[in-house]
Amino acid sequence: MATPEAAQSPLLLVDRQDGVVTLTLNRPDQYNALSTELLDALHDTLTTLDQDLDVRCVVIAGAGRAFCAGHDLKQMRANPDRAYYLDLFTRCGRVMQDIVNLPVPVIAKVHGTATAAGCQLVASCDLAIAADTARFAVSGINVGLFCSTPAVALTRNMPIKKAFEMLVTGEFIDAHDAVANGLINHAVPADQLDARVQQLVDTIVAKSPVAVRTGKAMYKRQATMALYEAYEFASDVMAGNMMSEDAGEGIDAFIQKRKPTWTGR
Image 1 (spheres, rainbow, N blue to C red):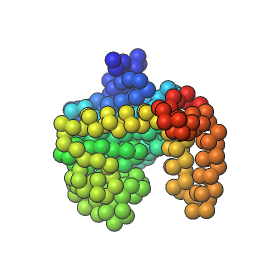
Image 2 (image 1 turned 45 degrees about the vertical axis):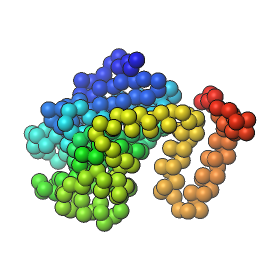
Image 3 (image 1 turned 30 degrees about the vertical axis):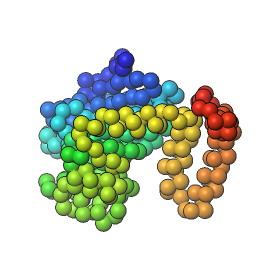
Image 4 (image 1 turned 180 degrees about the vertical axis):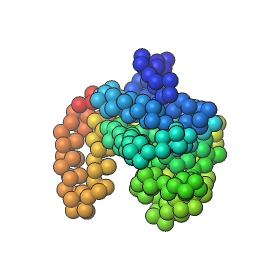
C-alpha cells in the first residue's frame, strides 16, 4: 500500500511506495500554477529526496484538469518589483536544476495541458509520458513576456528551430508533435497513462540502483563535454561501475542464465 510522507505541503502531495516517490502538484483550481510557495515545497522535497538512497525513481504529476500552467500570473502582478521577479525566476530555475541533479530518474506524468514554466517542468524531467490529449506551449509571448527560462530547458530537448517557433509564437503543439520533437517520450490514450507510466517505473526499478544512479549522473555531465573529454570521462565512470558488486552480480547472473539479485553496492 502506498504511504504518504509524514510531513508534506498541501500544495505538493508526496506519496511513496517501494522506493518510488510520486510528487503531485496540488493547486487544481489554479491549474497547478507554480507559486513561490509551491516552488519552495518542490525544492525542499527534492533536496530531501536527493539524500535518500532508498529512492529509486520519482514521478511528477498534477491534480485536476491541467498538468501545470506555469507561473502564477496573479501572484506575479501583485508583486511588481524587479527583485521579486529575479528571485521568483531564480527559485524556478533552482527547482528545474534540482530535478536534473537528482541522482535517480524523474518522470513527468502529463495528463493535461503544460504551458510556460509547466512545459519547462516537463522538459526538465529525464523522461516524460503524456496522455495523447495533452497539449504543450510556452505561451508567455502572448502576454508580452518571452519565456526565457523555459527556453533553457526546451533547447536542451528539442530541435533549435522548433523550440524557437514555440517560444516566439506561443502556439500549442499536441502530444504527438511533442513526441516527434523530443519533448516527451510517449503519448498514450488517457485511460492508459497510469499503466504506461507504471510500466516505465517498473522497468527502471528492476535495474541495478548503482547502475541507474551512475548512469544518470554520467549521462547529464558528458552532454556538456567535448567528444574526447566525454569518452575519457565515460571510460573512467564505466571502470568504476564495473567494480561495483551489482555489476559483478549482473554479469554472473547473465552467464548463469538466472535473475540477478541487486545489493545496491
